[in-house]
Length: 208
Length: 187
Image 1: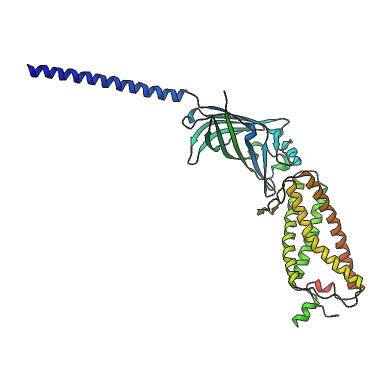
Image 2 (image 1 turned 180 degrees about the horizontal axis):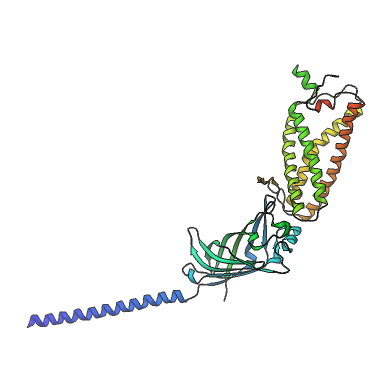
């Protein structure tokens, strides 16, 4: 009898303990799910470009020698967090007239009808489609629209946060003739290489 | 008699320097004048790219040629030349050496000032000597142009003097720089 009572008590205690454990486990599962849901649902930080501390440039090869040109006017809406690549996005709008290769003759030619044709196509637009982690940083798949032609141009970049802002540094390679940036004589690649390297170093500031 | 031969004639290396550089300079004038007539565009760019590559070739040859000249005395001038003729000959030759450096260097500088780096036939790119500078570019272009007229004037004088030696003085001054000839007429 005594032993039975003790056994019952033991059984009760065990049941109570199990119940408690189960409740805790359920709570933990719910909490984990909630955390996961939050990280998927919450958008990554949104940044804009601090123009004064940023550079967007391209490097071409002219008569065997490289030349670099920067764009003074462009905007970039960057939504990026390393832990939420699925919801990251870049949207870059470049004012092609703001090209500066440190020579006004060359700039005039680049803006002219045979290269950028800014009279008809004043801006270039880059939009990302997806992101992937790479050994040294990230790779974005996206499209560049230039002279009304839209082509895939992947970006390789590194992203580092700094205080409330971030730094985005990277490169892309494209072929100018894919976009028709070279009409008439300029279609020849004997003196102006087809390959153009795009490089950027953007200082990002949080955007409300 | 190698010593006598050396005194009478320029050696094969000196003759090679002379004629290769002469041919390059003629090419340089042809390229520069053709490019001057063209509007800004790909053809002008192509001609000037060649002009720069040949110009840098002249500069490299000028370095080698000056090094040769520092260790080799040229053949003596004929006995019959007057003091003023000798001075004029030496001054012209000295000016050529100066221009062999000044022409490519002012060209290289003006390309640098315009931020158009100089490639050597696409094989490699020479560093810019100075930064982008519009005022310097304009000044250097003027100097490069003026020096080219000085060079042309001196070249004409040089050719006329050589012909005078050959046909008026009847000495061996022209022949000693001509390959495949003998300099036996007058020591």
